[in-house]
Image (cartoon, rainbow, N blue to C red; front, side, top):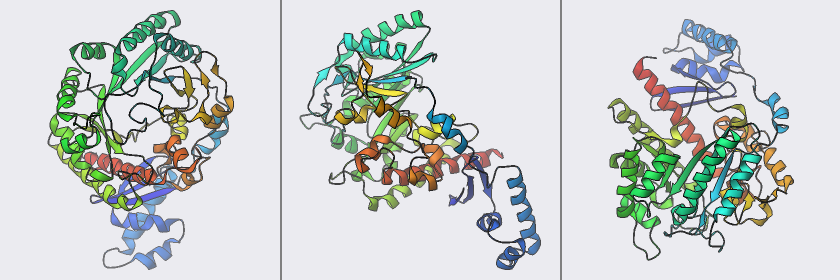
Length: 455
């Protein structure tokens, strides 16, 4: 499979199966779609003009043939034979999302957790349940040494004492079992203070700071329960934390909606505020919600990604670049094969734990009782659910078979597929369109910066 597109003055050709990217001239770009369908003589007859001479066409043809010979163009699917072994791989749990607090001090309009309540069940996780969760992770991690735990909510800092106790317990268990916990905290920032920051900087491998960009956007979507905006309270704290971590091992994570389709301005406002690690992504919501993104929004949103990509190139050249999570792409190595095929590992390698210890495939399935997999006391009792997720990959999704971005998005989010199509082997169509655009922009940025360096 070959994908071609033009962006910001570059003719880009992606060989999907090998991951090879080529920046080509107009003639080669025009010839590649014809190469497998027509003879050289037919291409000469079709393309010869004042712009393209016969000699030019023959030279371009030889260049394409050489790329094919080197197996960086028109390559066969290098993963399809692996899928049978992939399905048989042993199930190892390597990450947990601990719902340390089903409660929140904000009332964000788009919150899939219903302002932290998760279908009306407010609760704080006890140390005993959290301890059992870490024990479960260790017991089911096989020979894997590095284990990941995300303290999630609601708002985790509403249960900060238990967070501290669980981190201390985890550090004790590391020594006993030759494991290493990588802890992450996701917070809205309301309860951040110097004590919390000191603890986070000592113990957390990563911190996710929830914000939405411009003040008017943030305050509209992320108010307190009394309707007052939270921007002025949390943003100085977020910046202080980012600076205290030397602009590493964190990111500010925003959500754009139908109300701020000009989201590039939100990304840039975060960069101008002083953040260097930024993620702003589309809301996923039922179409009846006023803030939901619609198919009609897609062209405008794609144009915003183009605008953002060009501005990021400009700022990088000026020495004031920043990282945008959804434009991060590794063209030389990239994710391992399992990641390329199945993504985050929800339902198998990654599970969510409720405050009372129930296990779900991920945080977005919490409360969907048909996806209750077991609990931290008894383990995974619904192995059929696990097996269903284990078998879910880009080859079981018909929409992925014809998509050039499949090895970058790994089939997309299972929860989104379920919420919109009631089938984890389907795909959320609006999300797919936006993902394809992000991949195109990410590759273009790589091409532009390589061109700047003369590579």
